[in-house]
Amino acid sequence: MTLDEVIEKYRSESSKKSSNGYFDTFRKYFKNRPITPATINAWMEDGVNKRLEKKYRETTLDTKYNLLKAAYSYSEQLGLLTKAENPFSEHRLPPQIKQKKRQLKHKEHKSVRIEHDIIEDFLFKFMPGRPEASNIHSIALLAYFTGMRIGEICALKWSDVKTDNIQLDNTKERQPRSVALDSRALAVIQSLRLRNTKKSPYLYPCPNDRKKSISSKSVIVSFIRHWKKYQKTRADANFKLSFETLREAYVQSCQYNGLPMEWIKKQIGNKYSTESSYNDSMCARAIKEITSNPKNEIISKISELLRREIDVKDVLVIDIDLFLEKVKAAVYESRKQ
Image (tube, rainbow, N blue to C red):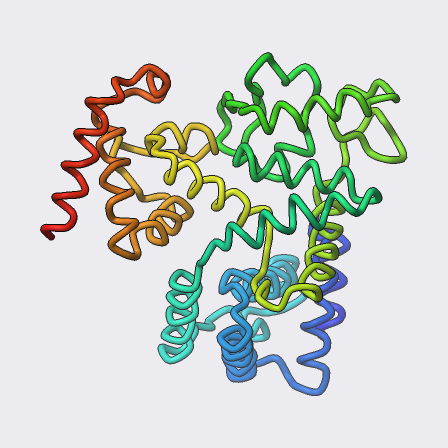
C-alpha cells in the first residue's frame, strides 16, 4: 500500500478528521522517499532539529509520530499490510534522537517566562481597540482573571454563574469544581449580561446558532491572529502567547499575592496529592520563575508563612501587626542565607 492509501483508509474509518494538516506534512516529506525505519528516524531527527531552533513543543513530534504509526497499524489490523510491510512494527527511536528530544523538553522547561507587563498591555490596551474581537477579548480576560481552561470558558452557561463564583460540573478532571470570581472577572460577566440580547443559555453563543456554544478552536485561531498583529507593534513581544500561558500567568499572580498553593490548584483544576506537593508541571514552572532571584525568595518565604499560618478565607481579617513581624523575620532569615 502507498502512503496515500494508508492515510485515506485510516481517515475514512476513524475519528481523526481534524488531522489533515499533519497528514499533509507526511505526504510532503515522504513524497519521494520510501517509508522505512531509516527514513522515519531521519524524519524525526529533522523535526527535533527544527523545533530546537524554533522552540516548538516537543509534544508535537510525539503526536505526529503516533498518528502515522496508528495509520499503519490500522492497515495491518485490517490485513491490508503484513507485519513485515509495516515500517513501524519493529521500529524504535535511536538513542541519539531520544537524547535530542530530552534536550528539547529540557529547553522548553527552562525557557518559560511570563511577561506580565506585555500580556496586560495586550489585554488592557491593544484588544479593547478592536470591537470585532470583543468575545475573544473577554474570553482571554476570564482566562487571565480566573485561570480557567479555554474549553471550560467557551462552554459556560448562565446557570453555571453564581453570585461570586462559577460552578463547573463537566471538567477535565471529571469532578465538579468551584471557580472564585474577583471584581475584575465579575465585571467581565456583567458586561456579557448586557450584551446577551439573543437570550442564549451560553455566555459565548455560536454566532450562527444561539443554542450552541462558541467553538474553542475558532477562538484560539482568532486569538493567535490578534496576538501576531500586536507583535508587529512591539518588538519585545517575541514569545508565543496562548491560553495556557494565561493560566500560568494567573498562577504566578496568585503566588505573588501569597495565596496558598492548595487553593490555587483547586481554583485552576489541577490534582494535587499533599499540601506541599508541587508536582504539577504548570505550577512548578510558575514557582520556578518566582524563586529565581533573592528578592523573589523573600516573596516565596512570605507565601510559605501565609500557607502555614492562615487559611485563604482569613486573608482579610489577619492580624496585620503580627503578620508584619513575621514578614520582617522572613526577610532577615533570607538575607542571612
